[in-house]
Image (cartoon, rainbow, N blue to C red; front, side, top):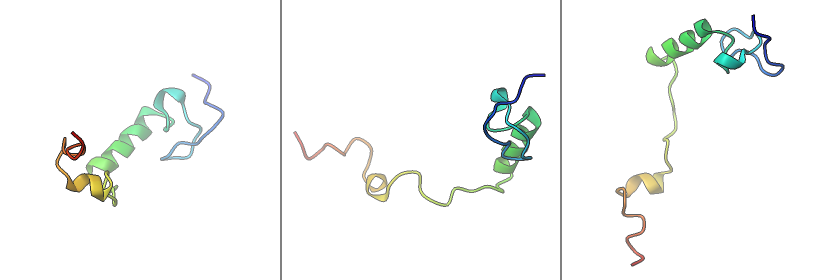
Length: 66
């Protein structure tokens, strides 16, 4: 068995993190987390982009300077 990393705990069960599965301790905990995302138990509540950039079409950011 690999030695767990010194820092951090598994985001699912709290066991020490394994570098191969970081931020989790095992494939099982990584799969549990993925299942929660796919089951929509986790949601992103803020837009990924700032509002001022999201309102303009792509490629139009430099249209004023020519």
